[in-house]
Length: 299
Picture 1 (tube, one colour):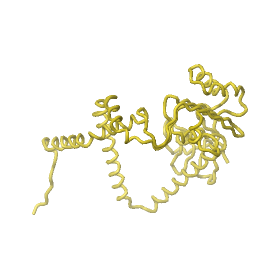
Picture 2: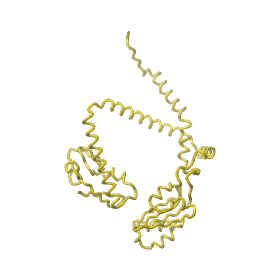
Picture 3: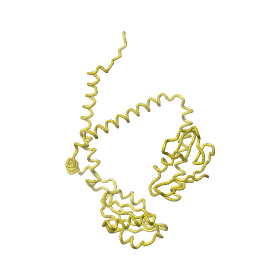
């Protein structure tokens, strides 16, 4: 085994990478001089000219994953990456005629470019025209369209090491919503490597928060009908959750949560006629400039 060290948000993360084929996996101890590496990136694993960078791994590493869990995830990701590279290169050797594939790729690339161009046209055209009043009016007139698929909450979540000092002080503060309490909690979390998430000002899916906490016999959604503050323990940590607002699945999405969706609906209502106009103008421009050439077979 070899050990590669990666920095993530100031903390040193050790990734143990099993090298099953010594000749194809190159870590920081030596690199292929003929490979052109991306500037500003740190090579982590190399296989037959393909390179996996530390930055790419960090982008997919789930937030909050630590210790052995982060090592296991990284090992599996690297293994999957190696398998993908090997499978693709093997496929290339066994499918020498890729003309049909190249045609499909070109068509797909063209459709992506057209889609992105259309998105930008619509954004430029309608974003400035759609006012907050338009959004509010549409939302009020069509509130039945905005049904919650997930329960939402606002609040504060803390994950604190069980051996951290002054726990009683934090247990007192975590239900407070004043700025001074927030600042004290934030400083405490930094000093004691605790996880702290303030979301009093924005809605979060309940499931996103619940997955960070140990499982209990009763779903958190049911508990919220009776209480707003929670303390759960396991062997290593204490979990504190204070909920200031709660909306159950099946209710109506609040305007602040649905705002982006409303804006897109208003844009979509106008996009068909607008895009038809753009395409007609482009066609007429080609005709007027004599850019279109019709090729007919001579009889």
